[in-house]
Image (cartoon, rainbow, N blue to C red; front, top):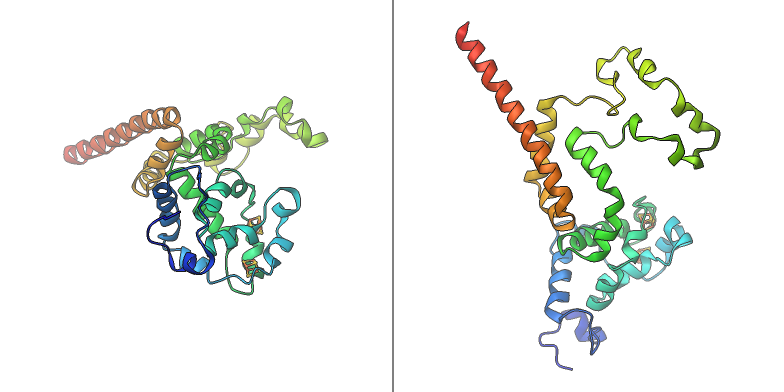
Amino acid sequence: MDHGAATRVQEHIGDPVSETPPLDRDDLEEIFADIQGDLRYDHELNGCLNCGICTATCPAAHYYDFSPREIVQLLWTENLEGIYDAMQEKIWACAQCYTCAARCPFGNSPGGLVMLMREVAIKHGMESAKNVLRPFSRVMLKLISTGNQLAPDMINPDHFADWGPNIAKVDAPLKLLRKAIPMPTLNTTATAWEVNLKTSVELYTIWEMTGVLDQLEGIDENLFDVITDIMDEKREDWEDFLDEQEDDDEDD
Ligand code: SF4
Ligand code: SF4
């Protein structure tokens, strides 16, 4: 089958794209180009001996059908179809602990490469990314709208039976205990700590400017709309506050 221009690697090992790929070859090429085009790619992939040291030390490989050696080999041999296939499930097993990066004799970072593949999966709106990230929508909402990931009020003893006897601590009078903490930003249970309006708006602007919100929109449009509404209000509140300050300064 003539696939047009082959890459340098494929000239030596043959074209890995099958007769019936799951996506058009152009789409597979585009996905790989996005991974390979990232600035981090050349730092995290220097070659691969196929030695398997990364997999031998990988905690995720012990529990899942996942091997960092396999992921690195797919990238190193530019196996477009295999890369796409791995992005459907396997890449989401990585715990991002980077034990592999500390062990690889080539100085590769398989965990870093997995991170790149995940980002590209999100960029391309892959179902695997949507499925994996769906359970985290509440955390994303909390994180972006309040600057906190988890709050004491989110922990319900009925939902954390696996904590065993430690769950009794959640039943403690947290509101009262929190009020006793000298730092005022910790006197709340609605968030882990209070993030002031200015910081919250600045964080949101960073997520906006760095493309995080665009990625979120591609993965979960409803969540994006909810967060945008909340943060638009916060921005207006911040603008109003600044206007008031300006008026006060003029009056003085
Ligand atoms: S970063 Fe991922 S691939 Fe590397 S050792 Fe940890 S779980 Fe395994
Ligand atoms: S990525 Fe490194 S540790 Fe893993 S198989 Fe290749 S050379 Fe070996």
